[in-house]
Image (cartoon, rainbow over all chains, first blue to last red; front, side, top):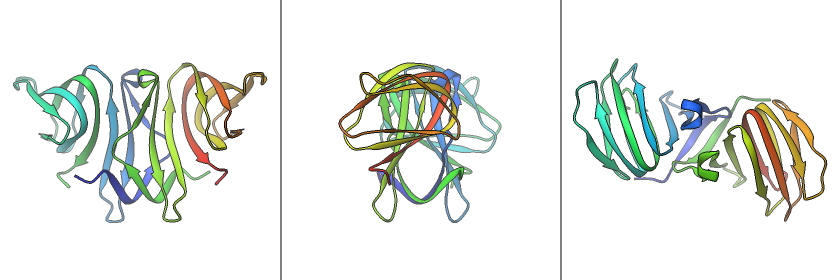
Length: 106
Length: 106
């Protein structure tokens, strides 16, 4: 797993969710794919999805539940989880999570 | 003022300061210059500097005091302030600040 993205464009303004409990930055690539890099501080948050997402956990520890009736699964640095389009996931962060969100499985 | 950086490399792991009150990402460019993009949530924080820094406020509202005896000055989106090397600044954020930190006046 590479530690950085190269040849990317990054917004100077962040996305701020839940009063700063989650901060992310939009990144786009020459082939027009879009990702975000972000941080989620300890606590439990719920996110909705529009398109399919792959959440790559770069560092940290959490539990994740996909959709309204999914089972809680542990997830930590080096692992990832998939969320379908038009769905949601609940994330309980135990150790600050650094993540990359890949949209449309790209 | 452009809204994004292009042709950049971005660390996937953020810098987290003061329990997440300030989050930033390291960005490097083909000419090896380095900047950070970051967010500071409402509150008052104190930062030390190693090399000279130019803090470009992308959005938000704050007051800034440079060094231990500087005067408080208002600073908001579109403005910037300079901090010498081996110094410090205190920042009182009123509205979430999105910033770019330029090192060594580059």
